[in-house]
Image 1: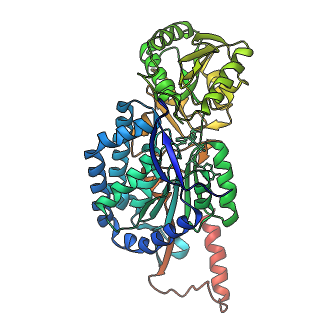
Image 2: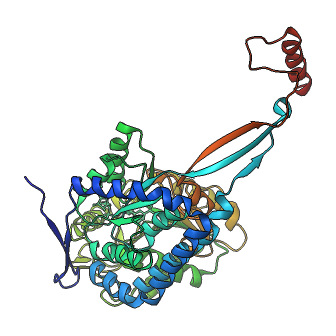
Length: 484
Ligand code: NAD
């Protein structure tokens, strides 16, 4: 079957058409990459200062037009405009941080040559990769891809961005806005389209793929990248836990955990899906969070499910939990009422049920009481995923955080790492590998070149077929002395 020439985005709340965009073909992808490759040398050559000026102008432009972009994002995702605005504000902060800090973290760094090579001068250079392909999801259509786009551009790469087919308008807007501040730069292209466009980008002559999306798609992309050894960054799903100790501030914990679980209709990769709470405060915590959840109104506090087929997954997880004996604190087996999902909090959900073991991606939460924090930690770590976590404890927060098998932890807060540009973002296990944000995020889009140059000649030459016997003796003795 031939590929459709355009894709249409719809409002998840009303079903109305929001916009039509090209379904970019493999030929066009290749053309964009060639143009980006040609322009990337100049982008690299203008250096950190030149790129900083342009990227900060872009940040300024987006911030001046934040209402326009937030309205478009709200229309395509179904999220409240205020949530879209918050998301864009955080994305702008990342863009600005990457622009200002690339020179600090990617400048040449001098290294000690070591005693054996004391006559050498050694340094490491961080070089742009060339053209980076960014493939993004729909749940945070500005924040998530910007974590790769901004950092890759600041590091001196060109970028071809494939937004989700559910939010092509937001992707298109980002491309147009960049062109307004850097007309003809040809270093940031947006290729709207469906999964086939993502396949074409992955299989192209690209220098790296930065993928954010589901673990299932991530595995397909990693397999395609393996064919050409294309480096790949994987930001995938999670089933993030919140660990609640008996010495926490119960009201603050309940309030924040509820938001972490249900904001954006639960469609947050680092959203909380499981709670492990100390048995001494389990009833108090559960009563409080249930009371707060009872006031949430779908369509006001959070929007419709962006992707209609996700409703089947959410319903399946809730029904599976119900069939395994879950007790509904809030909501019921009928919480899914398209296009909305009503807040659903369950307890006594077995750890092997879908709602605990797999990513639900809806406004649902499971609560399990535990006898100790050791039990909470081992249950949290038993997951196949390892994206983020939240810990609530006045005295033991950091100790608990350091034992969790995941990429990010908020202590006495939720999702705090998302709005902290200096902090690396990414997961372990089935949640992916590689990091966006922070110095690690900048270095993710650069390769290292080690340069070792002779400062002065010494009589001890190792790298010759005419190596003298005394040199061999010297090196043997020297290494023995050093390793006594
Ligand atoms: P998805 O995997 O369905 O799609 C993501 C992107 O991949 C889309 O642009 C899609 O068109 C493209 N795609 C689909 N199949 C492809 C293929 N075979 N080859 C190349 N590209 C392909 O994910 P989604 O539903 O858009 O997003 C939700 C998922 O993203 C959730 O699992 C969520 O946890 C995850 N997510 C992770 C992070 C993170 O930083 N770890 C952030 C946001 C979302």
